[in-house]
Every structure is written in structure tokens, then in C-alpha cells.
Length: 249
Image (tube, rainbow, N blue to C red; front, side, top):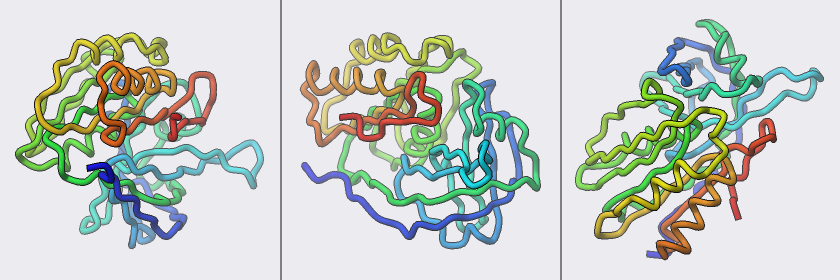
């Protein structure tokens, strides 16, 4: 069970989509539902896939780009759902907060998908607000008979979310100010206190890069978790607007 992740490449295509609906999901999360004829052929096989969103920049020929997870894609309905975590001001936050039906958004990708083989008894999903779209999608796609354990750090109880799934859910919500989202202690202390189930488990981590790195080292070094049963990514970097560390070496 070493090769548990299969990578798929997709045709790289840019699409212009239309806003169908907006919803303030929680105080720090806005949900945007997109549609449009250019969605035809869109493919996203992995719960943590990411697409590029393009926003106007200071120079007309150089758009600002941000990575976002396709929260849900419904080919039959012709809709794509994106959830925007609202943190510091930036092009994606500004756009999401002002988006209205009929507005347009240009996207690209996903370039590929990383699909985890369905061979695990449990999944531990750890992250902050930026990871909730991928966490929610993963939980909703899990089948009956497996357990989804979550450690999710959000600013307040009102930012917690509920996910519908056939899997058994064991959620753990942690609260800390947005200003402390780059500090590892909240999630790291909760991870150390967690008792994991028996059987084979996959650990998935996404947060600020230093937080994700600290959690990865905890599971590899302190827990001796098999490295090929773990995936960690820095979805954002403190002080680096629009930067990420997906490889997290």
C-alpha cells in the first residue's frame, strides 16, 4: 500500500463563467455558484484539486491569480461551487464580497487531480478556513463504512460547518482569532491529544505553510505515521499574498 495516490492530467483550459448565486455561508465564508456553457467538459477528480482564478491586476495584461478548490461540480446541473474564505483584503476576497448574479469570473484548470485509493479505514483531515472546501468535499464523497475525523481551526463557533456524508463523522472544531491562523499551537496541540482509530488511515493536512509543516513533522516523527499515507500542503504563506507551498518539503 505504498502507491495509494494516482495522479491524472487534464487538458488545460480557461473558461469564463457566470455567477448564478451567492451565499454568506458563515461569517468568514462566502459560497459562489457559477454556471455557463464553457463549463462543458470540466473535470475534477480529487477532493483537493485546485483551479486558477484570474482577477484584474494593476497591469491590464497581467491578471492576479489565486488557487481555489472546486467545492462541488455538478455536470448535470451545469454548476460549479467555490467557497471563499474571507481573510485579509485581496483580489479574491474583494471579488467574492461584491459578486452578484450575472457577474463573470475567469478560471483555468484544474491541471490535474491526485486521487487517493479507497483502501483506508479512516481519514484524518486537518486544516484551517482555507482548507474547509477540500475537507467538506472529501467528507461528502466518502462512502459508508469509513470514518472521517476532522480537526478544523476557525475564528468562532459561527464559522463551523456541517457536512452530509455516508461516512461516520468525528468532527473537532477549534476556535482561534484569524490573526493567529499562522501559529501552529492550536492545531498541533489538538493533534497531539487525538487518539487515532485502529486500522489503516490517511492523514491530510492543509493550512498556513508553517502550521502544515509542523503538523506533518508531528505525524511523521512523533506518530511514525507512514509517509505515503500522508499529504500536507501550505495553502497560504504568512506575509506572502497569493503564495502557497503545495509541495511542503
